[in-house]
Length: 308
Image 1 (cartoon, rainbow, N blue to C red):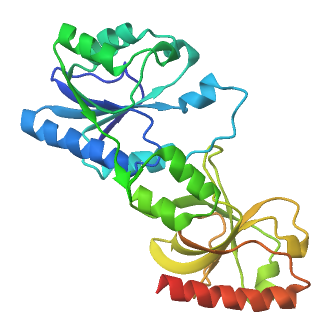
Image 2 (image 1 turned 180 degrees about the vertical axis):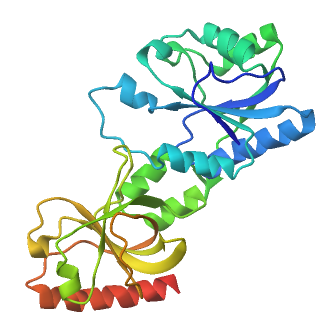
C-alpha cells in the first residue's frame, strides 16, 4: 500500500476506485466497503484509493468540544488498512479552509481532476463538502455530469444493530471490551513506551510496566482491571492491566499499568502493545497492600482462565 501525505502529492494517469471517510476503527462496516472497493478494482483493472483526513474533522470544526478520542492512532489505522489489500491511502490534512470547499468543487477538482475517479464507493449516510451540504442525490447528479459511477453500501449489522465508530467508542468508554472487539473484528489495543513507576507492585509480587501514550487523541477504555495480551520484544505474553488512579496508594494521576505474566526482562524505554480481551472489575481502594495483593491473585487467576 502506498501512502500519500496530501491530495497534491498523489499523481496517477489511471482511473481510481475511491472511497472517502475517517475510517476510525476500521471496523466490520468499514471492511465491507473496503472489500467491495477491492472487488471493483480487480474487475475493472484499476487502482483503489482511500481518501482520509487528519486530524479528525471534529477537532477542527468543533474547537469547543475536544473530548472525543479515537479508536485508532494514524499509524494503527494505516496498518489496519494495509491488511485490507488497499493500493493507495491518501491522508490529507483537514483544515478550516479545506472544510469550506463546496461539494460541487470537491467532486470536480479533487475526485475527478486529481484522483481520477472511475467509481466512488460510499456508505449510505455519506455527506461531503462545505457544511456537509453534498448529499447522495447531489452526488448522483454530479456523477452523471462527470461520467463516474457511484456504489452505495447499506449499513452493516451485527446482531441486528448497525455497526459504527461512535458505538464502538461508547462500548470502550463503558469498559464493554468484548462487545467493542466483536464490532471491530479484532482486539482493541493501545501502544506506548514503558516508563518508570513507583515500583509498589514489585514489592507485593506484581511488578508492572507503566505505559505512556504518545498520541493525545488515542482513546483509553474505562477505568478498571482487564485481562490482556501483551506484545513485548516481538513476543506475545498474557497479563492483566489496571487503568485508573491507584486509590490504594493515593495515586494523583491516571496511570496505565500492566502486569505481564512470566516475564522479567527490563523493558524501560521500549514500546509495548496491549490487546484488551475482557474487563474483570472496577478499580477499587483496598485497606492496605496485603488486601490489594489478595485481590491481585484473584484477578490473575481470572485472567489466566479468560486468556486460556
